[in-house]
Length: 198
Image (cartoon, rainbow, N blue to C red; front, side, top):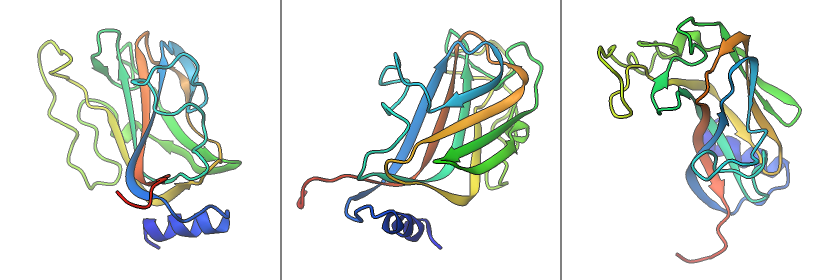
């Protein structure tokens, strides 16, 4: 089933209107200064986050919106805006797993992310090349030495309208530092369009 068909099927089963503007969607959420912890939960807390730190105000889409998730992006920045290895602020990589919960269903369970992590992380789906050749020198905001994690999902995950969702990262005391960690979900979506003509 194509992602467009799957989105229409889920919307129909939930009684959501099928009208709406089809679009590319990216949902993102930031956790500031997470420190050392055994777990992160993205898309749960929005209080105090600015427009550049999230593009949602709650962990549900509006009643006329839905999205199919195709890619997951994870990044860790220090206070100067320089990318670091996700969960390894001190340089030691901890095993981490990712889970996605939509409503009361765990749709991705304990997916290990260490294969995509580091200086030359290999793409999980093998559709992309290595994330980049290691850069030697002092990294800056414009010249990063580490690439963010990108995971392309092999199945379509639908986030329907008005259903809560969250992304969890579990580990054994991974070190996320004093900067920020970001999770972004990208894919195909539908947004509300009030007008009949454009």
